[in-house]
Structures are given as structure tokens and as C-alpha cells.
Amino acid sequence: MISKKVRELFVSLMEASDDSPVAYDQETEQYCGVFNNLIVDKYIALGAFELVEDVNGPTTILLNNRDDFLSSFAAGVREAKNGSDQAYADYNANPFAFSVGFEHFHQIAKKKRPQSGYICHGFERDDSGLVHLQ
Image 1: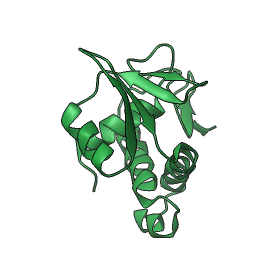
Image 2: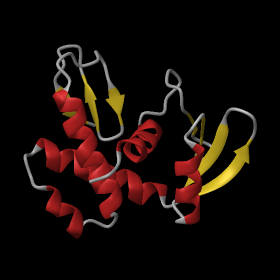
Image 3: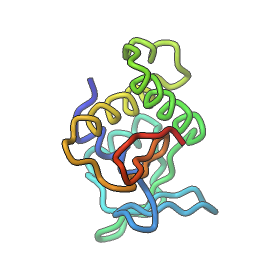
Image 4: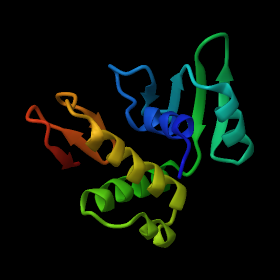
């Protein structure tokens, strides 16, 4: 199981948009926002991120192997939606990203009042609250 703070960090990257607290620059593939520095530093040391800029307030990071992460995150969402077991992570190229997506799907599914038009990599909610894969 992934800790709540770690899941929140990675989910904030998957939710990055013009309207969210975390911005994503498509040209540079960098994420900018205010993150938990302890967790960011840990994942920099593990090689998941590269620090681009750290000023007072916002931090800019680059997610290494972003395409693999996105694919695995979406696969985790898809398998959770299909009712599969999280053990499928063992067969995925990025088991960590798969698990983040899998657990995030279940966190969203628990909410009694889903956000209208919720968008996150791998799935979105329409106005009726139904989850759709992208």
C-alpha cells in the first residue's frame, strides 16, 4: 500500500491542468507546483524525478520515464475499474505507477459526491458522475 502523501503527490501530477494547483508544461514536460519537499527529495534520490528549479514556493520537477509512468498509472485505473486484483501490478512495466493508479481509482470511487467533470490521467468523470477511461 502506498502512503497517502506519496499517492497525493503523484496524483497531483496526473491531475495537472490549467485549473489545478499543479501546472504541466507540454513543451518541457515539467510539472510546477507547491509539493511536499520531503517526498519530492525522496523520489529525486530514487531517480523518479529530476529537480529543475526550487524557489521559495513553487518547485519545478521532471518526471523521469513519464510515458511509462502514464501508461502504468492508466493501466492501474483500468484494472481497478474492471474489478481486478492489485496483484496485476507485478506484471506491469512500472508496478509503482500501476499501484498509484489502482489505489487512486478506489479513493475516487469512495467519494459519495463525485466532482462534476473530474479529469485525471487515465479516467474522467462526466456530469452524471460516471467514470470513463480516456
